[in-house]
Each structure stands twice: as structure tokens, then as C-alpha cells.
Image (cartoon, rainbow, N blue to C red; front, top):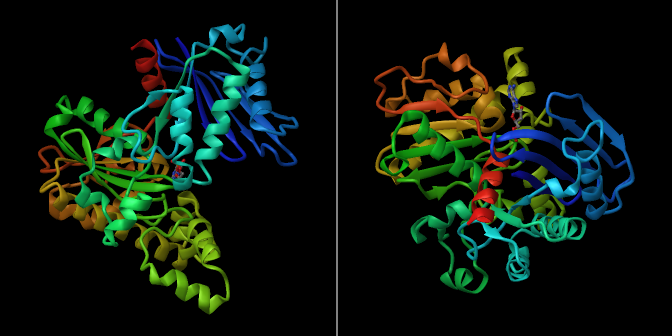
Length: 399
Ligand code: AMP
């Protein structure tokens, strides 16, 4: 079965066409600047060159049309016609408390997703537009929604409640939801497969360290806590997001700088994290690691602060699960950046991780980093959210 995986943002649309039998990516690409001047589609077929075409894409429906054009193109395409696309899997950011798993997208489901728009005002409307556009261009093709929040719906109230008046939870559903669920789910299951164990017998801490970053405590195959909250702003220090803050800082900065609280929140989302800590140098861990090595003190401060926060969360989640068997690093920096892993390693040795500096040099591969016989197995497990969405789509379409 050929499954088209769609990840729709407010002005972008990422796609992959995956053959579910071989789990091979047949083609992938990105429509960028949708609805803005200078929109373009970059498309790459397996084994081929990336081709970028500048085309006017006034809306997401136009973008989906170009995706289909590329996928069926005699030269750069991989299928003959639309009829060879058997199903579509959509990444959806927020499912609130309504969705604890993936679902076939029906009109009723779409309405329920729309009711979660308040919780993710930038993301969910864009996801819905992507679904509607696919419906228009590919009528009758089954579609599945896979939620970033669903995997974390197993968290107990003590993990998802904030220390706020309970009425805010009852009235407005203010609680921790967590994100990157598809990745935390995929990686924790893969950990068990690699180790030849049952995920239900393991306590796993998954460190998803990408541009956005989150960490989760997965006990017996279920998420019991995670660092992102009502929104993806909470938790770890990220590329451009601040992570945990004293909430009083928001009004304090607003008053001092003469800006609105919404502007402060924007700064917390877009100008903070390692970008902010490095005094605007970079949000990219490759740049920061190189600069720190070259003696850039501000880059060093950013990396140290970042790694310290990750280390603290690992300690907290080991306590939350009353122990830990495996710590898995994943996503861009977690998979590729030896320096970040080594810095985090400084704080978690007491758990019995024994990270071997030689093995830690590995990039982007499934590898066990800790010495044999270590009390806690530390490993790299590359994530693959698109494949996880394709698998979920296949499972539901075949059900
Ligand atoms: P993601 O959001 O998962 O794509 O991760 C993006 C982050 O991963 C960026 O900060 C990159 O600097 C980092 N990253 C990606 N590839 C590498 C690499 N080869 N070496 C070091 N860091 C990397």
C-alpha cells in the first residue's frame, strides 16, 4: 500500500510517500511559503536529486495539487496516477483529552479536532486545512489522523495537573498534554525491540532533542510523564523556546520592556532557548558545538545550560518511575550531537549509565552507548515520525 504522510504547518506542507510493505520512502518533499510571495516546492524521489520549483501556491489546496503533480510526474514522480495513493496519514498536533490514539478522519472527528483549536491555535487549524485540501484533491481516499498528544494521554492526574485552582482544569482543560508523542511511542517500542525485551517490562526515559525538545518517562509501555505542557513551550530549553520559567517573569519582562505579555510569550517561543542564551548566535546545535570548541564562551554557556536541564529531567523521571532501565537519545541533536550527549552524561552517571566516550562518537545510528553490564542502558535510537504515522495509517485502514 502507498501511504502519503502529510505534516501541515500554517505556511508549509511536508510530505512523504511510503510503501508500507517495504517501509521505504518512495519520495518526499516540502511546500514552503504557502500563501506568501516566493512559494516553492522541493521534491526528491528515492535515489534522485532534490528538485526545487518556484510556483505560486496561494493556499494549501494548491500545495496538495502540486504534491500530486510531482508524485505522478513522468520524470521525478514515483506513481502513475492518483489512484496509486491508497491512504493519507496526517500529523495533527493537538487532540486534547478527546484523542488517546489515532483515528480514521470522518466529519465528526474533524469537528472534534476543531474543538481542540483553542489549545493549539497556530497548529490545529493548519492541520485541518491540510486535511480539507486532501479531501478536495483526493476524494474517497481514506485518511487517518495521528496526534502528537495521544501517546501521553496515559499520564496520571498527578503528572498532568498543574498546581492551579482546579476549576481551570474543569472549565478550560488547563493541564499538561505533552507533544512529540509519535516519536516517544516509536522510540520506546524500538528500544524494547533492539534489546529483545518486552516494552511492558521496561522503564524508559526518551530524550527527544531536536529543535523542539521534550523528554518522557515511559513505564511499562505507557507515558507516565513528559516535559512539554499545555503547549510545547514548557520543559527543556530548546532551539528557540525557553522551556520552564517562573511564570512571573512574563509580566516582569512585559513591564520592564514596555511590551505586551503576548509579545513576551512570542520571545519565549522564538528568540529564547539556546538561541537566546548564546546572545543570538544560533539555535543550531552544530553551530553551537563548533563555536564552543572554538572558544565562544556564550555558545558554551548555552550548551551547558541546555544539558544541565536535560540532566535534571532525567533525574526527575528516574524518581517518577522509581528507577530506570534505559535512557534513549533521539531527534536531530540527540542522534547526532556527541557533545550534547557527553554534557548530559556528566549528570546521569550516578544512575549507572557508563557512557563509553568512543561509542558516543557515533552519529545517527541505533547504538548502545553504555558499557556492557551497565546498570542503565544508554542508547541512540533514531526517530522516524513519518514511518510511525504510515504504520498507524495502515493499521487503521486495514482494521
Ligand atoms: P530536528 O528538529 O530533530 O530536525 O533537530 C534539529 C537540531 O538537530 C538542530 O539544532 C541541529 O543542529 C541538530 N542536528 C542535526 N543534525 C546534526 C548533526 N549532524 N550534528 C549535530 N547536530 C545536528
